[in-house]
Image (cartoon, rainbow, N blue to C red; front, top):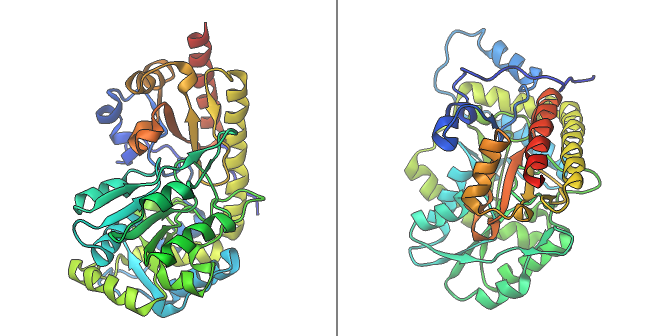
Length: 393
């Protein structure tokens, strides 16, 4: 089956977050919103049809999470990522960030240190500080080719007996890395040595571009399974963030019981009836759609790359291996962070995420969401090219 990503349904006046917050975030509604990580691409038809079918029954009441929902995800993870989870390992969650906050409460105490590898999705460090834990920053190392890797020596020098948890972003948002097995094994070795629990955010794991292969942290070894809390879900892969459903896999019973103590106190309950059927449909029917989506997304990325190559002294595109989030090195523009943001808003008419919001290491960078239709991508390229030409002149 061929899916068409050339156009998408208009989201204006639908209460879509990325649109209704334009005035608040950018000071104008006259911007193409390319910040928050959802897609301006229609949610797959098989998901919508599953929800419509459920609505044929006129009662939408309390439901338990159906085992079939988790079994669909377990099968997907085994087939697509070569990692096996059992039904008892799985817990429903509203979001990865909600799961992360439970993990912080469950596995650390006030004053404990939590490792965060910047630049990274802002809730990683905000959550640590809001829980009155100490932020242990282990910045990623920027290589000569513009890609990133772990700084293991820096991490070794900072870990001490108060270090209890590592928040891993894999694949990484915003730098687009798919961590290699040998890179992850270096992290694992340190965590095992120092009894550190790993919370592995793998929400972008399905959005990996060939020839890269996602390696789930829990798949590294039996020892890795015993220290890993894996957060996964359909929100990014199938543009289903509005269903507010994800999951957590915790094979180690002791860790799962500690997690559940906080989880039950908060009362996550069992989620939404419609989310259950949408989640299950995505994992059962989504493979072909997802493969075609990734082909489309990578074409969008290549358009952005081709544009950046026209202005090599102004803007550089970080090599991407996963996600639909381009990490733009804009230091060549010679602008301070506020000026850089204003350049994209007022000169290009584009609303991006400021790199500085991902940590100090993001200064001079911007994050651009290219998960849009071909038609919108052409508009984006035209706007950005004009702004860069005027700046160069």
